[in-house]
Length: 611
Image 1 (tube, rainbow, N blue to C red):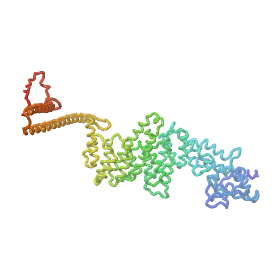
Image 2 (cartoon, helix red, strand yellow):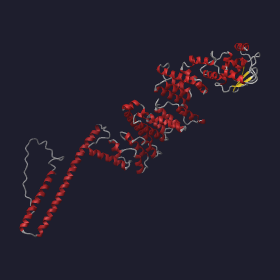
Image 3 (spheres, one colour):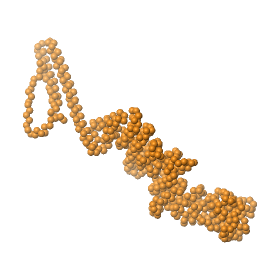
Image 4 (spheres, helix red, strand yellow):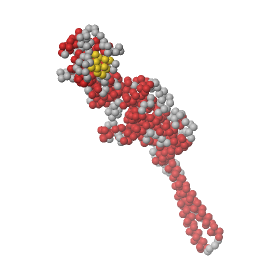
């Protein structure tokens, strides 16, 4: 047996292209299979072991393969016919297929073969499957040395090894080559971030585009285990998704035969890093969500993207949300409900975190700074939503329910002023002139007229498109401000013009008070005069009767005269208070008279009598 083995090895080493293909090998055998069959065939040592892998058949020798392959040794021992019988084995389940077995057989025969980053993982899996692990070393050891010295030393080669593992699952995971490759890729990325070796610095992101979503997810997990910065995870995720989905994003209406695009989008979304680890930019997430909705991705995928957008909604611009609300051409409103759900998720997230900035910084929320950040984020989102509502308000087919649902998704108290929201409402009313009073009131229900600025209330009070109730609310608020002496706008943000307006309001308030005081005194005078007329009339009636004694009449006349004098004195005092030249805002200006002596004529004292 050793002599036969040495003879076969010598034949293999001296082979220069001669020989023939075994009759058992089909005509469709690959070139590598042809070479294998040629260098192992010899008229002095006919093959007694035939290995079938799919459509390829390898004529081999038990004397060579059995000592180095534990799997073949066990199969030959279990075969019938004795040690000299020809054995046929089916190894179609071998990881790596016929190409990996060809190199494994070459190793057993001592022939030269090439180990590269594309077949290293397959050779490791094939060696493990065939149990080619002798104590003194074997095929797997040679491949491991190649990986350590060459295959996993650079980022491109490590990515190539990891990519080659995608067709070897789950065998590649069982032997650990997948984890080793993913760790090597993550290590090389971290090194490139710290010490870039190429230009531009983020060249490494393009290398990840060749990986499948499952392999990319393993790289992200390895980066997270290495405590990579969130910026690294974001750069890797956005670049990978953009490069992998470039064709889908470019033309979302392209024919999706077999749901390939939909499956690709869903798989990419499933492996994106979590929001807590790396918040992906809102602009990219909005575009990705628009693609997912357009191609009909699953509800789970769309909901996942909606929650991701809600987590970074304060970073989104009006254009980002319009990308979601409008169709691909950007002409018609299509997905208002999607935008409304995103806003609702943001509001819920902000409320659950106590306004702590969406829970992004635990330290900030504990110190109290998170509340301010959260309030600022809510106001930013409110302003963006108002601008989006103003943009879509021009759509004639937009129903009131969708407009109100979008504009009212943010709480009213989140806005410092409702001027932007009033602009959106006014645009909607102008684009829908056929609305009746009740419908216009429903549209205006999303805003609070009391939170408009002075310019906004002034415009609203003259806006004929607004319902009467909104106009009256604005006017009533102005009256309240007038009476309280605060003529400025809401929030205390008066400018120079607002100061002038405040002075004018204070002057008007003083004038109104003087007029009210004068009206009250006039009313008192009328009452006193009416009582005096009634009393004098009563006295005239009693005198016309002529009854009673002279003394009684005289006494009564004295009493009545005294009463009349008191009434007329009261009236005189009242008239003196109403003297417009005595004081008040109508008083005559005497500042120019100087110190000159003023002569006044003392009025004669008259005796009032009822006779």
